Length: 94
Image (cartoon, rainbow, N blue to C red):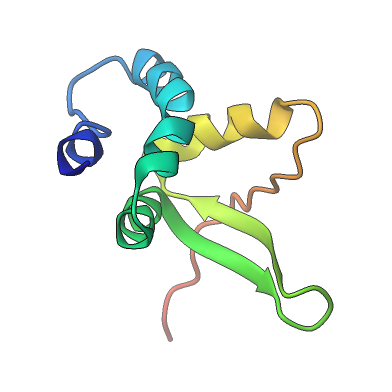
């Protein structure tokens, strides 16, 4: 599993091709991953996760890291997708 996680980001490789490969393999990788491995994978892919703790206690939006933006943009176009992306950069800590 560690090897698969390490192979997700390969500098210098065509990003579009890698995004397609990742899109196809991600469900299998997540399905085989332990909870700790899933957490590490998601920390690698996401800058923020927005959770509605008042109404539904569910994830309502995500902000992917720039390298993974294309992957999540593809996910938003799938039929029945409830994926909502936040594209604004993170606020600077004051």
